[in-house]
Amino acid sequence: MKKKNKTLGLITLLVYVFLIGPLLVIAAASFSDTNYLTFPGQGFTLRWYAQVLTVSSFIKAAQLSLFIALAGTAIALLLGLPAAYALNRFRFRGKETIKTVFLSPVLIPCIVLGFIMLRYVVNQYSLEVIPSLLIGHTLLSIPYIMRVVTSSLANFDFAVEEAACNLGATRTYTFFHIVLPNIKSGIASACIMAVINSFNNVSLSAFLTGPGVSMLPIEIMSYVEYHFDPTIAALATILMVTTLGVMLLIEKTLGLQSVV
Amino acid sequence: MRKKSRIWLLLVLPGVFFVVFFMLIPLFSLCFGSFYGEAGFTLSNYFKLFGDRYFQQVFVRSLRLSLLSTAVCAVLGFPTAYYISKYSRHKGMMMAFAVFPMFTSPVIRSFSWMVILGKKGIVNSFLVSIGLFAKPQSLLYNEFSMTVGFVQLFLPQMILSLIGVMDNIPDDLTLAAGNLGATKLRSFFHVIFPLSISGLVTGSVLVFTGCMTAYTTPQLLGGTDTRVLSTMIYQYAMSLRDWTQASVVAVVMIVVTMAVSSAFNSLSRRINPMA
Image (cartoon, rainbow over all chains, first blue to last red; front, side, top):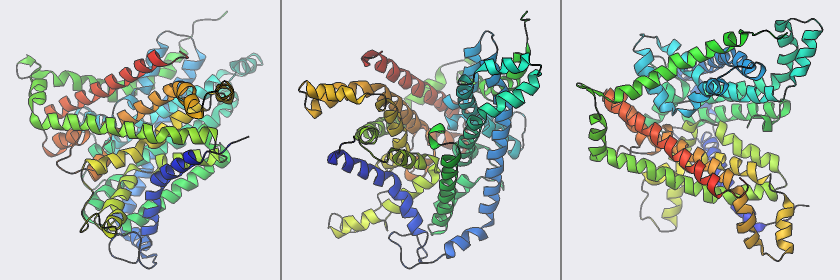
């Protein structure tokens, strides 16, 4: 039976107000019928939401951010999934080193990653903006894929795979029909985490975006530096509601515990 | 019958090649480059940097803000995590509410403090109305607003790491301590706290490295005279185009975050009674 503890309960409540409150403030301010951002707002209007859709740089940046996050994660999956499988399935030396290599992008500060990519990859090989963003965001996603897929493979009983092989299935067939279906929820949660992380990333994109090609978080940052109207609050609210939707979807399908 | 198969090589190699080529080689180039001057190998880039007053201030500020934010996160996170782990009836929902900010862009989260702490913000109007401020003044673009931003940004990580270990502490232990005559407070400090240290350390490492390397929050909530290492790297690299200095700062950032993380970890191994 759970007991009560009022002091702890109050502290927890205040901490959550501190964590969530600012986000609610933004949501509330997005409906304010004033030309500047204020909370508590005055009046009620949806015009800032209409306004967001007319700013073409936001729309373009949002499309690019989504594309880069999805494509980068897809490439990371193509590179990471086979490797995670091999690390769990086969015996060979240097496993720990290889694993460290795959996890290393998360150990390097993002801001440093952006800088070294710009200096030693983009400038060295004169890469265009889109390919450089794609490479950078693939690097961001690889550790997520590696970590989650490895742990779901660790729970997979490879005896099942051997049984399939003994019954005459080929290696490839077994992988796609036996192994993959068993770890698909792990893969799904890894991909969702990776996409969200990549979509929200600032420090890497700050180095890799170029003139006329921007990512949504960068676009928002430069907008806030010069404007202080509720447009950004409306955009932020749209993004937060989307996040909430994704979280509910995860909770319904995979369970939130599997993701964090 | 098992013949030596090399198939694993084929599966591992593309990914390894990708990370090595696009990240690890550039990383080594960064380190080597930072030790190179006109006359070959030299430490002069580092001497120059550490002799620079401006860099010293930035370096100390980064450390100070990160340590302060870590401490605040620990103080706020500990009771919260304990409550959620042992008392809350809506644990799943509480966890979800801690995760939600983590999934929300740091740009939005920093921006929310610009609304709250700005001149027209709610904190200002409150402080003016109770007469603490004569007129609204900006609470932004200083170390205070940066710390607030950092704490809000990384507190969820601390809470979740602590819940992770606290969930594994059996309730019987505190019951036993109580039966043996320990007060609640005493059993907390002698049973719960020592057993939660590993989570506290994991959380602290996450918060500390997060603060040391965060770029968005100091960029939006800090000012030009409160730069930290990350904004300094960006300034050197993109505004001043001084790539050598940017490299040196980047190496310093990597070394400091790694050194502090491993120090924290060895500390936790030493004081953890269960290890």
